Image (tube, rainbow, N blue to C red; front, side, top):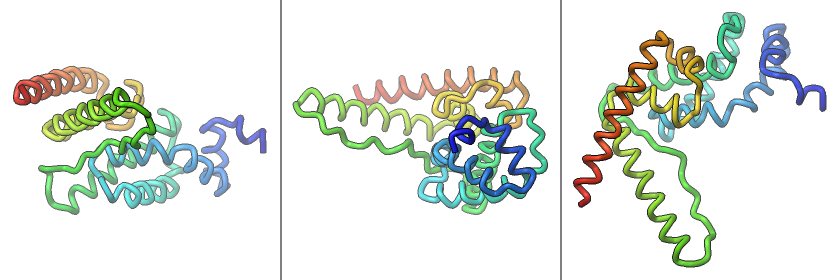
Length: 190
């Protein structure tokens, strides 16, 4: 098994395209966490597991269409993003999307400084999530890709299917809008 650990996605994809189901299962295991995070951050909420399961099934069915122009990860995350959009359409509502960041596990810090720090971190996270919810869907998507999922510009282009210039300009505008929303939030708290 040590030789399989050294294999990169491209080799697993080639094996999976040749019918090796175990290779696809290894790809799924490797990318489940980022697929889940993508679905949650794009608004799937409690249905994130259903979204990624459907995305993995569709990914397997469409594996023969994967040409390797982008990383397998960004190709798969594009499917997750599309499935999340499908979920929104089936809910028939675009406003009030559920957007939750991964839950912060309560720390076992002993002492007041740790408790105060945890409260402040949770407050900052909540403020950021509220501001993200107010952004238009496309602005939210580019922010999630670039900063929450840590995707490169190339991966974001591949995942969202946008032109590179669109990703650059939308990222810049979305960050400006987000900063403005965070400033308003801070002012309203006094």
